[in-house]
Image (cartoon, rainbow, N blue to C red; front, side):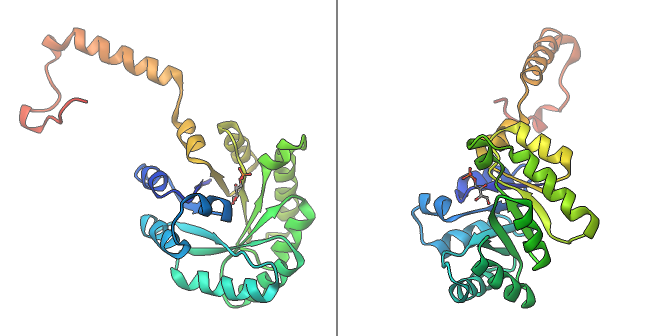
Amino acid sequence: MKFFLDTANVEEIRQAASLGVLDGVTTNPTLAAKEKKPFRELILEICGLLPKGVVNAEVVSTNTEGMLREGRELASWAPNIVVKIPMTPDGVRALTVLHGEGIRVNVTLVFSPSQALIVAKAGAYFVSPFLGRLDDISSDGMALLRDILAVYRPYNFSTEVLAASLRHPMHIVEAAKLGAHIATMPFKTFEQLFKHPLTDRGLEAFLKDWEKARETLGEILEPAARPSRR
Ligand code: E4P
């Protein structure tokens, strides 16, 4: 499963990227607006932090012509940009054309298996079902993901399923169990994936025991090679 960070915050992306398990970033107009920077500058800064990953940048036009212009422009900014387009009839028209031009498109705001089928037929690179927003209205987001994967399976569509609007670690685990290609998550959720109280408690006990026997055990590293203790 690929991990994407659902943010446009450069510091969060820098921190997550340093761990070596980050495959990409998803931004949207709401996330970009929080950063208070020119959009092009922001996206290029993010692209620079993830030269081997993909960066999803969204159009804001709502008609096909505008989406085509913005999509081509966004794709020209850096080779690792994927253009995000909303799931509307105009969006699907734009997707068809951009796919034909070799531009990678992520279709966003997907809430039903029928929408997912359409965008796979039209050549979407990613499809983004919003699981958390369905859960928010007492619907079953995970059931949508299961249905999309089920309808894609018999046809071997190349579209990758990007589980979006994830809110907590179990969303990611459940999406992985179902076989979603990608999970995009807020930085807070990414951090939560690493945490377990037994890991912290276990490490604390190991270090305490080591400290007690320190005189006998000595040091692993020669004095000159020792890093300063935090
Ligand atoms: C991802 O591409 C979406 O923009 C994002 O996951 C939406 O998440 P939200 O429902 O938490 O805003």
